[in-house]
Image 1 (cartoon, rainbow, N blue to C red):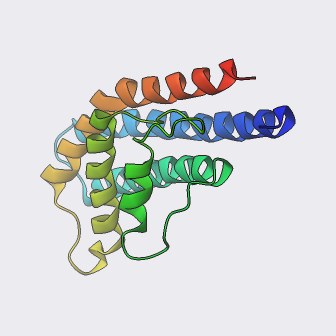
Image 2 (image 1 turned 180 degrees about the horizontal axis):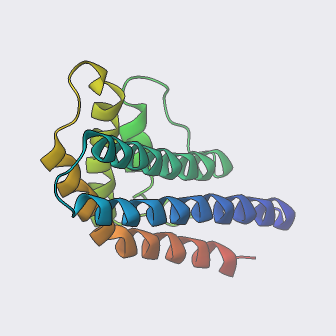
Length: 159
């Protein structure tokens, strides 16, 4: 692996990670807003929007990893889940795993929500489900970010 290419990859990885952290900041604010009664449709939709953005940012990060390490994923209806599943794999001689099985489960649930969010225009969002998932996402934040840091550290050690 060329050192320069790897440095560029790590810079892009870190920038995307910063975007993820900014989204978590927004989500933390949403938890506070949704803790107050009554809960408005607008605040639920806003939380849904930011949860959708969080998964999209994670997927951008995973696409970056897949492209750099040439982990080809078919562009069929299963692309999103295959991409996420591929990030749990350690590929000997190529790259370490990006996320743990536990993080996969958390992110797969968020992936499912993203799908619902994109198609909720005809029936809206379930307030209780959004609030439940939002709290869960904030609770799982450190676990997922720890996986990403471990991946980055392992890659950095190879420079």
